Length: 267
Length: 247
Image 1 (tube, rainbow over the protein chains, first blue to last red):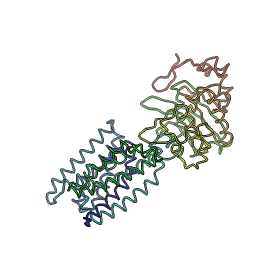
Image 2: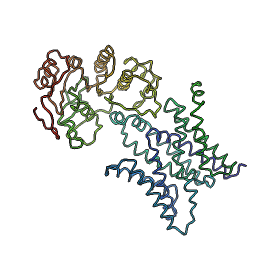
Image 3: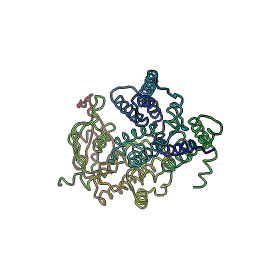
Image 4: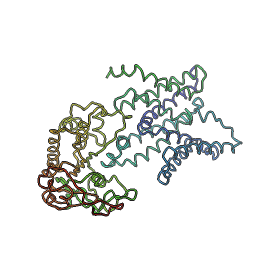
């Protein structure tokens, strides 16, 4: 049962879940789920660029997603359009442009389903290195900017007034989001990556009374989702990415019921 | 007072938003161990001036120089998003790494040490205000900016907290920029008063300000006699770019 590809899939999934845990909390706290979607959709363009120029997919996705984030910030300053309209504009146009470019690249055979919904079982050793080194780096940077980022999430003016430089923390966080999408695109796919960020964090919110606990439960929830999702994917022959997200949803539904009381009793 | 005691200095500072001056031409400075109070009617630019002093606004007119980064701030309004699970203890640690006894001590001083492990969303208005003040003083700042710090606090608590504020300015030798509607307290505890009405109406020691004609016009004759009655009459309004129009 434990074929080589399955072990690799597990190691990759665990690596991604550890990073999406804390980042997902910030996505929920800062109401960035649609922003995460936009970055993820733009990742398709990144993938096509990687194929066109024979480039590493993760690095290409990271660069394109960062570029889209930068364009978003510029547009926000220059136009009077509301933020969600700008996000929708960028999300769908970058997805469309990505698909159009794929149409031109007739000499390459694309696994569109794999791009959209993930193909964790095709993860190779290079991907594992990118996930674990990249993920470690993301967590390290997040730890460094934690205080200003968290303080400005609670209240921007307090953070700014007390000299924490929240704007810089926000810019760095945007880059971290792009980096996370780059390392995890292969696992859950660009349509489901935001689910991996939000659902474990949402489950954790139901169980926590402090930010630290929420991050911890979010990581645990992500890990359980990956384990349950992957094993059931192998058992029932379902696609791996959607199985992981479905497992996360299952845990979220559980968190709405009895678990809440039992955890509160333990404290 | 030598210049090295200055903590923050505003020179003809102002802020224009959507073609309207929120406040214009404010010159003031806060020094170590001194309490500077901003008074004025609603919409006169008190909170804006405080935020200009804190460096929250980027596109301001004039000059602001802040000489310290150890700042404690109690905003007038604070909206906290309850998607965040946040206890009082987490909130105390928001901008500074404090030791547990430092947290306890600050909460004790403002009388809310028993709320330390409560969720922030469950506090009453007055309790939350005490936590805000505790958080601002716990980091032993050089500069405290308090925007109506005792709003919603019960009457006896209000007096105790004002005494605490005065006490802190002496003990920590920190400068305080205070915004208050309580003229009685202002006049008794303040070193310097700045009366705002979209611009600086008058400023000086409490006694000087109380005798000032513009102050009398703004707050009424009685305010300068009893220093306790807060009532103001407008003798002028402002047009769209902040120029004064006499009524």
